[in-house]
Length: 67
Image (cartoon, rainbow, N blue to C red):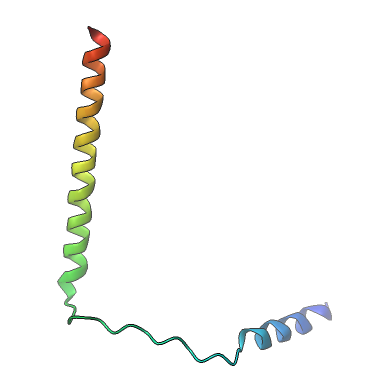
């Protein structure tokens, strides 16, 4: 039990490093609340296209196996 506070102190000291923080990239354009929605919509379209492609491939395989 006495070891726990010592480990917590060492972890806190280890987390504090002397390295300066890395500069954060600034956004290229002003983002709007709709950007996230547009990104989600595009991801959904991409998933839909991938599913349609996979379905078409499976249909071809089923037709080839049935002949």
